[in-house]
Length: 62
View 1 (cartoon, rainbow, N blue to C red):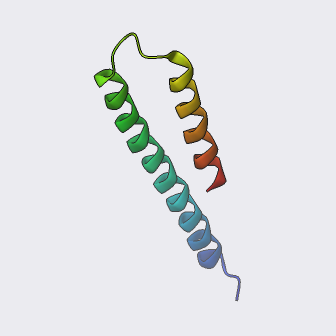
View 2 (cartoon, rainbow, N blue to C red; view 1 turned 60 degrees about the horizontal axis):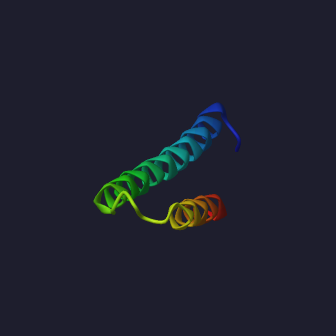
């Protein structure tokens, strides 16, 4: 039974999942921004790049 309503329900389900992931990413980005604001301006920039790349890898694994 693959009616139009079923197809719409599936599309909205995946849209909801995508928006949820986007929200989680935005929340983690906000936390990261706050954490970076707390850090000293003389912090080693290579550490920040490493953290950002790890966050990106973890996000795209999901």
